[in-house]
Image 1 (tube, rainbow, N blue to C red):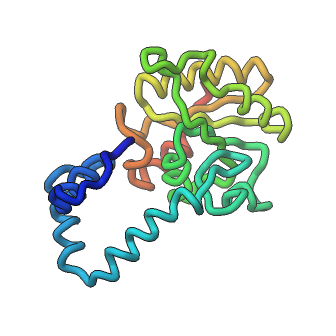
Image 2: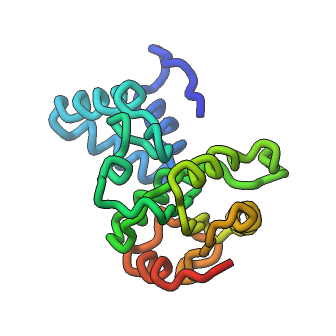
Length: 204
């Protein structure tokens, strides 16, 4: 996502509106409401908000183990010795593992792919990051992998590909149940539905 450089001659309100609508789920009306709120709030709030946004690239990194976003070398679940190391939940994006964490229904660990199989989008088996997952499964003695990719065409294709590859490695593979609406994203699924989907997972 690339924004054009700031132009001192342009309208700063419209500049910010155009930037905000590039965010997920933010339309032009919502963007204008946000800008109006920032303009009517204490100026120090807008400055503090801007400083926190600017600090994100410097302070946040990928966890060295699972790949989710964290301010530390290892995220909370990976650093927690009480988590079940033999069960691994594989998700497509950090927002998905965050959604599952909010259910408090899973006490294993995560692996974030940062990708889904999408040949039309340029991600085929050759580009898919399967090697890192297989290496981690072997190194950590993982016994079960829960595939929690989204219930989309790409997510289902990824789930089948992972199931075939992991079963060949001697690992039990399960899939979260269909409590999540088809075509929806885990990030926007309520915790109760997502928790039931985890509890009702099935073997692929």
